Image (tube, rainbow, N blue to C red; front, top):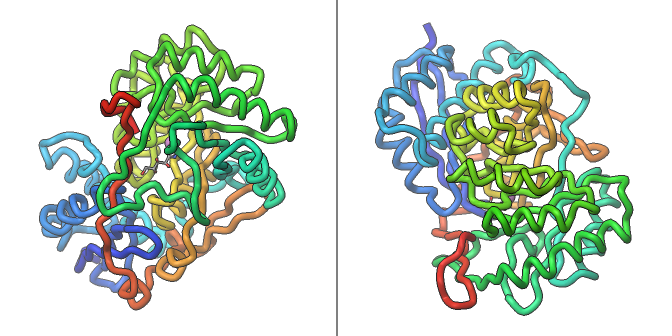
Length: 402
Ligand code: EZ4
Ligand code: CO
């Protein structure tokens, strides 16, 4: 019987920090899993190195479900981003190995294609409305069929989602950047620029917007009503989701679709949102919600309630996560959309991925497994650097959700 002979935790920073798990079997087959938790990377690296790797050595790599149950139930301590990201890395690497052993791309193991390609959206942004409109035009010219729009709110300096360089990179400082926030200024400004996007470009593409957890439920209800005429594909994270019941209030007021879940880590965290039909899209991901095994469980629950998928795909999800996401997305019946921001050029030097972008869609690699390779030599040129996500403060100095 083949066994797990080795499991290495690889930390590198090609453009940004990534934690990667590489499992090698006694037959010499390797599998990769993403273990990146933005701003808390080394906690997951330690969880893997100090607590999971010793449990993996000697196990049967083919027993993916059993390994998942063993690591989840065996921890005794349930859920949470560090645990679920570590389990996800193991799970993803084992699916990669299973595909390579079978000689099939992972999506074939998941039931094969349900669609021709994976619809993606990218991030347009601007420091003001004219530059946002230029950026939307740029993404439409690149062939995107769906675009997320974010603009800096005047007079409050830092707004979520506004790109400075080539790629939007919020975790950019060695200590958290403190950014000002005003709900009033945002609510006065944001609906206007979403209308400006529709006025200029019309309705023949999907328009998305990320509120990024900044509003109370009643404020979010007002925002959703204000932008109804823009026919958004979704408003994302209108209010923090720890209290799932909060979304009932938003729902009572607006038909703007709602997407939640990028920072939620288990089926239990989205159970009520899904079964009460409080959201339209579930944004849980392979890397933060327990791997392909657990994500499919979430997506199957969602399918029962006509909730579609819309997985997180920001730059802090490595090309391994993106590849795994595309294998899942192309196979599940209730796929909605996939976030796709692309990565810095350095990232592609370390992670060689077979995922392709064509006509607004992503296509999976046809290579056995996930179709991603990790270049150790290149990785050595990019050592880990501590980086934090920003913190938001209201104009009176109190901490707000970032
Ligand atoms: O802020 O991934 O929809 N995308 C997002 C992201 C998140 C980052 C946090 O690490 O909200 O930009
Ligand atoms: Co988001």
